[in-house]
Image (tube, rainbow, N blue to C red; front, side, top):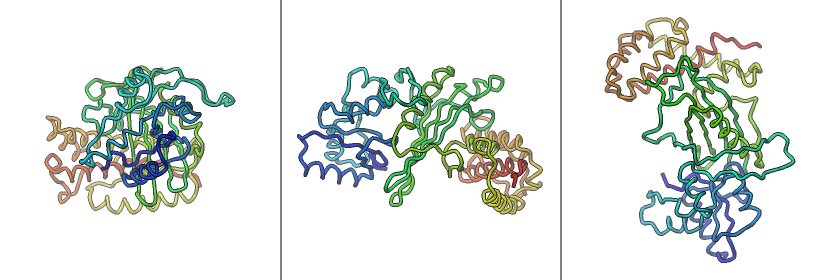
Length: 371
């Protein structure tokens, strides 16, 4: 994937950048599948500047923690012969040395206050983001956190930003493992913050960014959650989604929670109930062919334990063979569907998907809609 793909830039260039050069810059960003916005929005990743100019837009960006990046960063990509090579953006951050160090640790610039003083719903957040490491979902050494077995949702919010050619969704989650279930064998931390940004365009499809922060200090992650919430909620074109289930957005943990509790404790409407019922009937037909027991006879707790066994296999643990045996004992299969899961990654993924179907519809099946 191109390094700039999916990134949203606001251009705040000085007069030293002529019109023709600016158009060439815009065209290059479009070629790299980057987005250009003319106002600061919740989906803005960076503000491109040609020098350390002081304008309302740059001051507002600093207040919101959006990094100012020298335009030379883009020129470096244009000069590079390797289109997929990544260039260290920290070299081009236009701010103090302290903020550069903070950006290298957290990917944002600490919020310094400001914002809309007339808003009574936004509380000021005093948080040094440099103390919290932000992990990308594909980082190799990301800390362990057993989301699917015992974790619970402490706080969540889903926002939508509507633009001319795209929709951008934001999902914030504060995930907690209760003290009685927390152990160092499967978890490095008891608390996890999850941030997801999903951009959907008609021309390029869906681009997702998922990041995490971990801690054992609830106050620390609560403030981090609040800082993200405040930044997004105060932006233009933003609405908070409360009455619709997101499509493949947010964690499996939150999606399961939204189904079980309905959104904001409101009952699902008739159309959603009929859709889920039809999907359930279709899935039951497939499951009857695969399983040697009735699908509805398998308890939700059993399905979650079976999924945990599959995750043990996926993590290449020494007990993969034992985990495979445990899975098939928890979810009995017809003989023709019993396959090697230790050496067959494709089959393993299929079984994980099978568990998700069971979890989703088992939860709904035993919690009928009120029509």
